[in-house]
Image 1: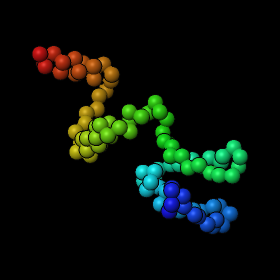
Image 2: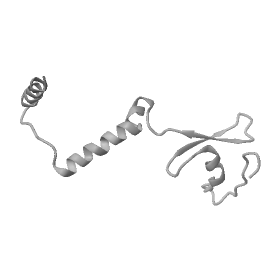
Image 3: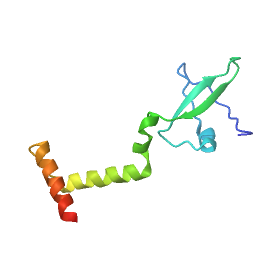
Image 4: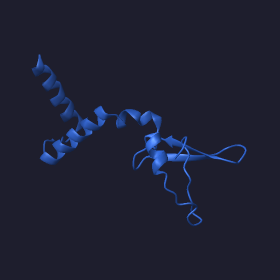
Length: 102
């Protein structure tokens, strides 16, 4: 591969291609999404990494949030959860916990 170029061969009509060499240069990992853009003059393609989730959900995919999700899943698996019969019951327990903290 020279200067960020790679030669690929059209395989069937579906254009199944391998972009392994370019993926390394772009920092793409398995499962990442890319968009192919055709240049205005129609003579070249541009490979653009894209996010698959909406920007307003970016916080959810942060490392910190994913760690919290894993802890929550672990608590669920261990049975460290409690069910409430009503919202009022939950609020009452939260208020008591807050009062006992002082």
